[in-house]
Image (cartoon, rainbow, N blue to C red; front, top):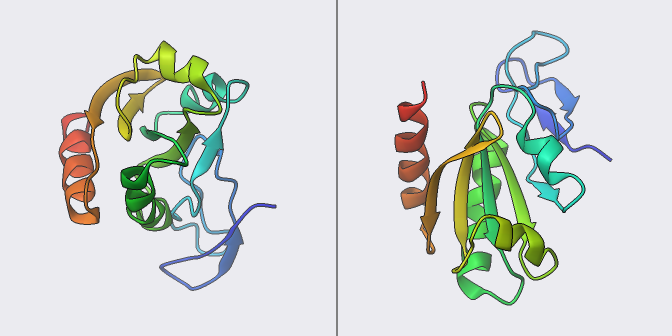
Amino acid sequence: MSPVVSCPSCGTRNRVDPLRATPPLCGRCRAFLPAGAVAVLDTDTFDAFISRGDRPILVDFWAPWCAPCRMMAPGLDKIADTRVDVAVAKVDTQQYPDLASRFSISAIPTLILFQKGRPVQRHSGALSPGQLDQLLNGWLNTYK
């Protein structure tokens, strides 16, 4: 089931598909809504998801046993919950090593920003929520 997100403008609760290609709009006032959830990608859904629309997509390549990966999860959830200018997705490299290999992931966590289906920025290593937000702002300002 899709998550429910409150509109920051009018407060209306809206059901949001995290795999949407474009930022969702409030059904009542038509204001942009945050995506509201981190999309979990696998081998079958990855290419279709990163190729959708014009919105950049931040993909976190992680593994469940990785403490730094788990430390970054709340910061990524916050970005997904509050930002309309980027979609957030995760790939479990332990479960989908083919995707990790395809993007030469040699350290986790690794973040890759995709624009129109192509990787355009990359960072390996854990970041605090503030550092994550700062890095993402710099990346997104490059592509505006």
